[in-house]
Amino acid sequence: MSEHHVLNPATEEIVATVPASTASDVDAAVARAVKAQGSWANVAPGDRARLLRRFAAVIDDHVEELARLEVAEAGHPIGNARWEAGNARDLFDYAAGGVERLTGRQIPVAGGMNITIHEPLGVVAVIAPWNFPMPIASWGVAPALAAGNAVLLKPAETTPLTAIRLAELGLEAGLPEGLFQVLPGAGRVAGNALVEHPAVAKVVFTGSTAVGKQIMAKCAAGVKRVTLELGGKSPNIVFADADLAKAAAAAPGSFLDNTGQDCCARSRILVQRSVLDRFLELLEPAVKAWRVGDPADPDTRMGPLISAAQRETVRSYVPDGAPVVIRGEAPEGKGFWYPATVLAPTSPDDPAVTEEIFGPVAVILPFEDEADAVRLANATDYGLSGSIWTRDVGRALRVSGAVAAGNLSVNSHSSVRYWTPFGGYKRSGLGRELGPDALAAFTETKNVFISTEEN
Image 1: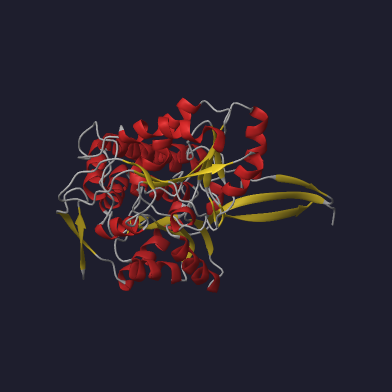
Image 2: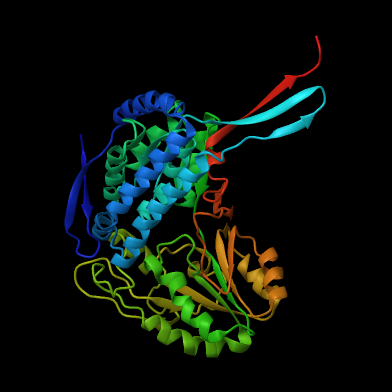
């Protein structure tokens, strides 16, 4: 069996060596999952909910351990990593609450009674990304288990450690053997085998739009269900009537959190022209105040990029002579560091304006009026998230209705809450995750008609 080295992106040191799953490993794991799922689906809803709550409690007991693993494999600041571990815990707790509320409907019909029933799909594959390994894996794993499915989780090659530990904690909590398994390895091997396996009923994928399209095409061959959370190029729209001080203070977090490796990053800052100069004056000190450094330091707000390859990708969007208007600092030496950068491109076709960078780089663009702001916001193939800063409630509602994105915030940059639905428009994805309907996305709806007519 081949192995994969896990690097600490802040030091470039090897922190672990993990076996890479093969297609044969996937076959064996699917067989175990099929067996476990049949029993799991017949567990009484209250007992299934109690097991998932116990899983959440075990995660809570290991939040610090999981956070330290996240720091080591992903380079996330320790404060962020603790939040992520706690979020994984909360996702399982929330999903447990949905088990006994996964109800069908009674639909009035002539000649009898009609009811609908939610039944689990069977075996679900979750292919998780490296940018938020624990939370995004749990987006799929928690509701899929709660709905009565077995889950096979393939973490990203660079960040498998928290996934492996979560599966171990699931067994410690009492989940049946084979119900929740982790298959680390290459996407082209383990991921592909999962997507093409006939016994896998659904694939949940978070990652690039290019890979998402490939997975969607493969799933189409077997008419397999798929949920895709893909790329983004989200706008941060600042109107002249906004509280500029608050908007500028909040803006760095919208594209620097997780070192910009966030599909929801507001990497296009659209500012009404009449206040552009003032906004830039306020933005510069806010960007430079972000502390970049050792992820294990509680005062650090931004860590390194995930890899040398990702750093080169980010650098390609800021060539020599690029229109840099704000630049922060970053450590030198070992580690995949890159400074916070704000560009002011003059062309709407600049790749930094149109393409997802996935790094701590934003562009700032002026707009004239409300219609122009909407036009610029929608001038993208993506539609995942966005923010609107204004004191005018009517304008907030109008612009929210006009911007083609799945998750919008007014006077805020909050995009993801586990109790509200999340997903994208256009090439940002397909389907919705999280929220009160999360469990239903992992079920079949069966319709049953019972005649009441006399024979």
